[in-house]
Length: 295
Image (cartoon, rainbow, N blue to C red; front, side, top):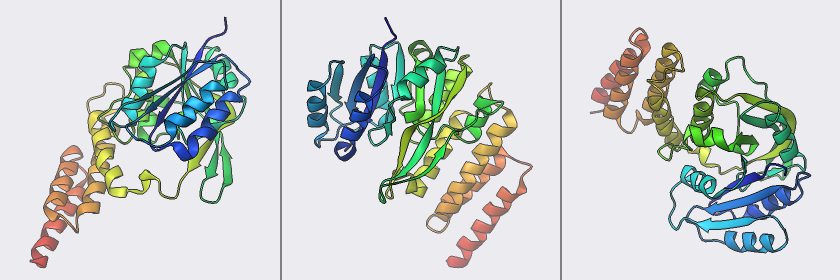
């Protein structure tokens, strides 16, 4: 029997887009799939879309609502717990795939990888237009490169063997930014081999009102992401400290006008992480001077 691929879809107010994602799974050239949709506590027409879709396919389709919003990591973890497949693949409810996505991903894994990702087309939702196609290259040191800058732009590109996902322990619900990157990194740290299909088989949707535009929230959670990896034995110490300090300083700059005391504390933490970088000490001193002048 061909391997069963579990398509895992977290959904939150996904009604306007979910049907497009589901139909892209129906159109796959590879037929041995199941779909698990976990709605993260929202209550729109997501369930109705899933039920209607399930009536029109022979493959297994499962829906569950978590009741309260717990975040995308918890939704993906629940979907993995419900999945029966040999391979997990992730699809955000607003993205969709071309018909060859599952087949090319599975073929890539069968060449010896534990985790793979595809190329993608960037799709601008407000203008309903495709911007560009991208096929990322795998860096020489993928684990370190992921930590430095996530080159796997969306989880909708990724396919992973069930055993590798379970060995890594799932997504970290405490992270609101970089939770996918953190998961891929743990798969690689556990010995997983990474590959790219070399084909742009995913449409990655950009929204004008994306949560990623909430700069302060992103900056706060970026600090949490880099703090988590401060003691990682799989990453160079200098890189860990450098990126952690930079995230603290970035947050400090964002809050400086509204909360100078917090900004000063953040700059000092950045300096302690990188004591030879006197810029952070200067930022802290400058913030203290400005705070006195405003009184």
